[in-house]
Length: 212
Image 1 (cartoon, rainbow, N blue to C red):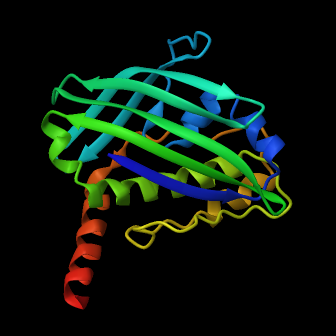
Image 2: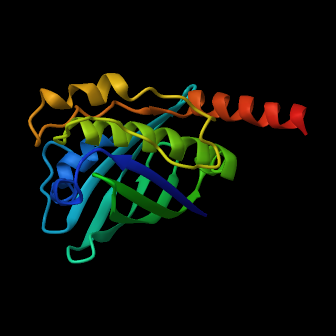
């Protein structure tokens, strides 16, 4: 399944691209993701943990990713695979990203192609995953903006098929960027709650049925 997300940062492309060189910064900006404290980032090989929760089901995906970057074009990709030993669920995929000027800021385009197998595959329905991608994009953009210098720190997610499926106000986070150093990043979230995403998707689906 392929999903594309876009967001705009109030920071020039050169500064955003510099932040993309800091793998730990990027991982810490993604809710639920982390690099183990005892792990070593070896070149473009990145050990990862990603924790999700759906009601009583808690999954802890452990795996490794590989980062490839094209500095001249300001684009790259992150591919990887991970497994949760408890549910025997597996996920693998690749995320391709590109940075381009957007006024005085930067538009970031991310296209993700992924596959999920095992017990959690039932939650990989397109609508639910798009809602999750929208939420993760909003929070990642807000956290990244908070770690970047900007005269007017704002985050404006652009068109998305489920833009109102979930809500997240990035202002309280982004507003802190004026007082944070450019290399800081929020502590990684313990997990991403899929149950809240599922409920938001269900509400959106029901509204669509009623208005049909």
